[in-house]
Image (cartoon, rainbow, N blue to C red; front, top):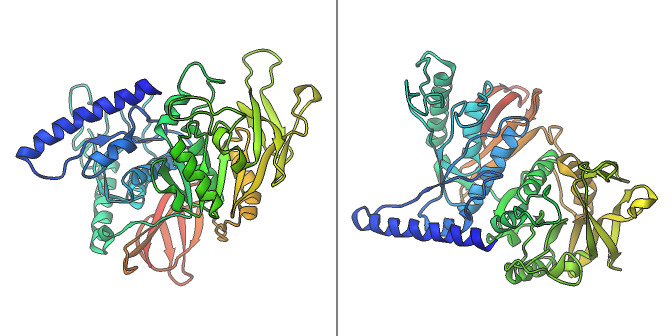
Length: 464
């Protein structure tokens, strides 16, 4: 990915030149708005994060069933780029944008919920594009805080509700807090994304960014809200770490991975990880190259899958009830220190019948699970309970596990501790309420029973 690395660095040099010129006449904190989203990898925002005084981001929601999860994932990644320092949501939309082929509006409740999700993930400023929807011009169909309908509109009423919520949370001390660290880190790498975008790869169906998002969602399905951490970040300080299709493993990252597991870390590694170094040179001897002994498997070749040719293999069933699509590893040997958790089920002619699909290896004082196929969010969610139990990672015992995303912000003293509860489903979620309810958007609190009913697109914020 050397050309994209050069382009990102050249643009960064240009930013620094402009920043330094501005500092001479305006010696105040300088930033520029990033475009951090699940699939946004035009430049290496993590590397840029070191050269802005504070991180700011533009984020526009992804329509459809992944709307909320993608937003939460992207906001968590932004917090990771900011190294858990305060960051700004510089732009997002109150409803539809104007630059997609079809510009979907937000559903009732999503304006408040989406903004509070960014806030929960560490943002200290919630800003919109734009204030008033223009009567004419290129962006007249882009939503705003004051729409064409004027102040007598649902959008403006929701904006006012959000403003009142933000004022209340600020008065209660939210601005002294940061996102509470999770027990699980999902690692994202801009350069691995660039490497998978190359046209000469084993398959064009694999892109790095899809796998971290799938893991974030699958972990949430199992009651774990993960932190999304850039590869340069402090992911090795977490109880458990996921390396999802991290195609590039430099010598430095390899060293960190090895030390992390040897010292007792709990690691998840997927297919398409550790194939090349940071020069895009293949780690030889079988995949995953520099960490084969850490995961305890040796992959000789890949088995991409598709239906683009009649009769070609387009999926593989696993004996744990999940299904692999798009990609599988041909695992030819498993170390004595490892054991197979799930195997492939297939016709004899494929060579996959009974072959290892998911394994767990002991390495030093830690353990490493290897997932050798693309299972998607649903397959990962179904596979995770057994893997989490064997690696000793505790999950929520609440009845609402998977229905509600729990995010916490707190200060160093513990005096100010806020819990955000977001309904991820299209059904009502019933949650226990511990603490003082501060914000209830599409949520009804039953104070006598210390519970709350959170409607679809609803959010409840309590202070412990």
